[in-house]
Amino acid sequence: MQAVLYVSHGSRVEETRKEAVACIEKAQAHVNVPLWKICYLEIASPNVEDGVEELVQKGATEIAVIPVLLLSAGHYYKDLP
Image: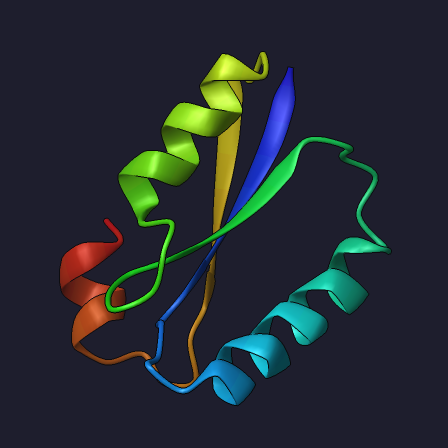
């Protein structure tokens, strides 16, 4: 089953995380994939590994990883590939 893993940067600031989640949820409403998860590269939970594990446990056989990052900087080039 196809799944989508949205990967955000993460923040200690709760309002910032809420803004990221709201943005991702708006986008997800237009994606025809019922199995999806939001995770974070650092600071916040769940992390990428936990996000992948949860999707697999729910039946994912393919996972599209969508980076939700402001810039194509270090996390984009180093952590996501």
